[in-house]
Length: 176
Image 1 (cartoon, rainbow, N blue to C red):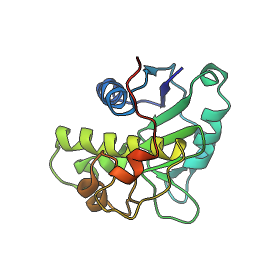
Image 2 (cartoon, one colour):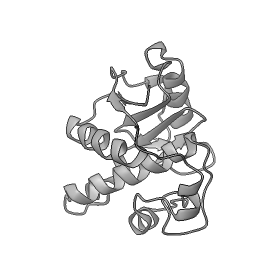
Image 3 (cartoon, rainbow, N blue to C red):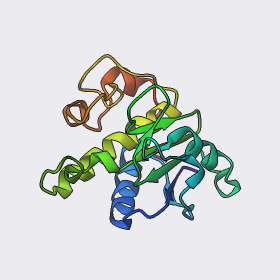
Image 4 (tube, helix red, strand yellow):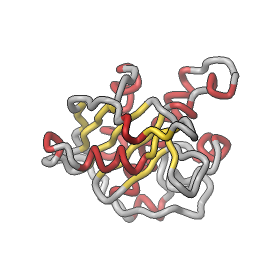
């Protein structure tokens, strides 16, 4: 049943609708918006002032409403981390992924608002994490969406397109 988009906590619906349209085009699959989940405050680490992305992934995996979906993408507007890193733009398992919008905004870095750039970054991170759910690892091509983003410089350079090698590993055929 395609890809379910799930907000975790408060998320601007404009970005959800844009992602829905763009992910449908890229993955050639039905993309639908599921019922949102409340913020998982148990994932919040007071010392870091961040949310542990793995706990959010686990929460999404346990939601029965999305069991029929092929893939689930959680979207949060909180800063995320994993134990080994200062922050992450997102994290993925075999069927479920999560992205954070927080560090994708220019305003996070005290720069002027740029809605177009924000949408481009959100799409890039969504495609990257969903790529992992479809079995793709990180790619060595710095222009491929599956290249590991250590910073927004990487995200902005690579964009949301798969390189030919990664694309060949996916079955992205439009439905007949």
